[in-house]
Image (cartoon, rainbow, N blue to C red; front, side, top):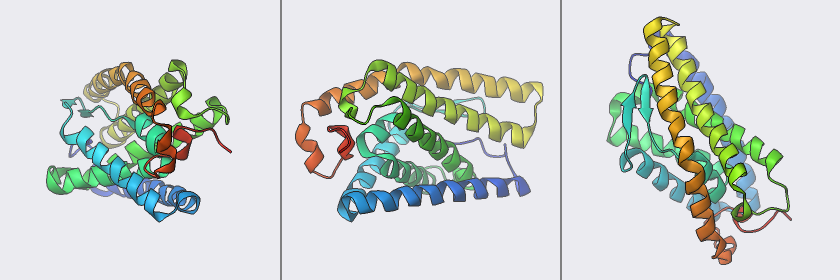
Length: 226
């Protein structure tokens, strides 16, 4: 996952450092809440699993350069439903960093932009989940319409942030508009896949109610809020 090098350059990169710092600070707040709720072992385990999943999404699953960025199958809503907001956020940030360090060092100057692009939509998804999922509903009992809403919110947020960075860095010329439009159209095709992936994963988890006691997944996965 990367904004193409050179789209935002020079002093304009300072904004990405600020947005990434803000996103990281909020992720740490969520992490502190998760730590108090389930302990360090659970938070570390869920973060590790989320990081491994994100790294797989980036490096193993098919991905294609389209317009101003790449189209990946980044299952943001799946990560959230399985591991919770904080581990999902840490996993996205760490998976992205590992990709840059070991496979795509040319992406590191864009790390702040890419981190912002992945994390802020996740936080929006978390807020949406509180509004559309009743407290007495476990995530394994979600309807397709709810999974679709979560996926659309996340993927739409990613597209919006990519567009923001592209316009911020390169302006509103015809070529840039076309490039952003091409990326957005291609990326939103992920919405056709992600809700089905969510429901498939949740269906598997539904038969394993003991997952709640392992600490490897968010407690909300298989049981309603207390």
